[in-house]
Length: 216
Ligand code: GRF
Image (cartoon, rainbow, N blue to C red; front, side, top):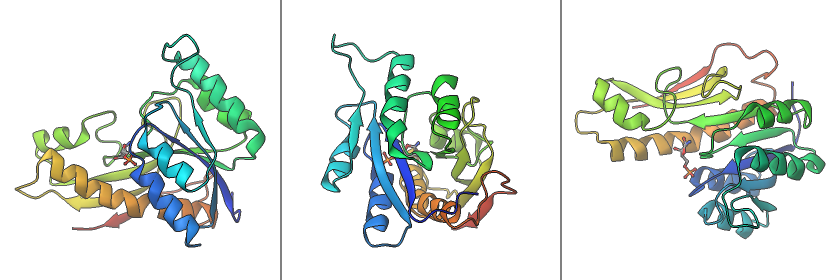
């Protein structure tokens, strides 16, 4: 069980970082018992980096190598692990991180950092792993949709689900409205889940059924 105060977290991002911003805001007002010790991006132009810098959080960018080529996966992952190693990270959080991670990083986080890793995913897992979740939900005609926080394993989006937030899909919903509505849920779900982990309400070594938040 983690139960650390503050819980030292590293956040991996690729884009806007609105979920990162929620974590920063709640950390800064003392609502969330975390310390964000690093933000790592695989994109140099990710706005999430600006958000981190504005909050004086250490950032690492592993985008292009000195030859101007996008880092191959293994190289990115080795650099990221090396960056995290001295920081005493308790938990790695993937929040809008769009590069698929290989066992090198996933096992490295476990074995070298001795830390668990969680991912925020915009669907009610195990349904709709991967991309374009909102479009797929509408195409299938599902009446419920939402987001999940799950443990990261070497199988894509398949680790144990820790928490979910659920909404009712409306007749007028489009992929864009669902994206916005799911984002709003994510801004509640991710910090709450991290708070539960920090306070031992969710025990990552022995997590039971997911905690589910129903909304409409
Ligand atoms: C979120 O919808 C998350 O579920 C998905 O990517 C999006 C990231 O948004 N994995 P942001 O970068 O936090 O704004």
